[in-house]
Image 1: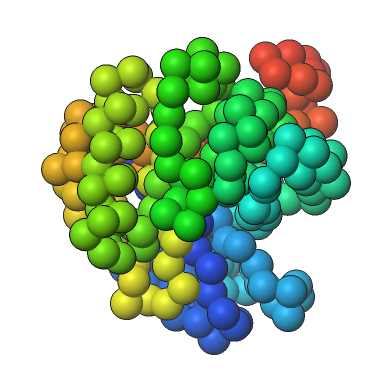
Image 2: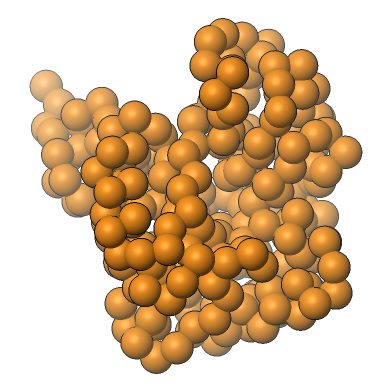
Length: 225
């Protein structure tokens, strides 16, 4: 696996104890960073669990959107308060906006939402699509939908992030194991590794630069003395 830095781009622990256990598990599995959908009752003292295991910590907002307005409102309200903004689209209309809005980091395609692609959607897509291990291992019907999406992504050369969406340690898997599953679903193996490493890592680096003021806008960096 070389010098790749692996990221689990979406975990959702229920409490601080679960988070600590998941940090330990992620470290043992070989991850360098975790992106956490933080429950409302866990706003304080999160970093200590990450520091203990030398992991990078990022906060993620996940918004379910049904309309164009839902996406735009979420992007305006949450973009500067979180390291990552993921939009889970419930309709095609929401997906058309989320796939091209530069404030959105990933667009989650999940079985309880919208899971189809057409030519118009393809023409406007600029943001990575996020798929999850939790969905891929949930049931046969969902697995078939995800396989069809992965094969489409591979064929069209779209950017994809594959995260665990785990809520407890037993649901976490090693990056090579996850990449092998993604490869079996139809994505080139090198791109399967990218979905767990370079693509999410680049998103995180870009967003931290924007939040710190080092990047003024996409592709425009503040010169250092």
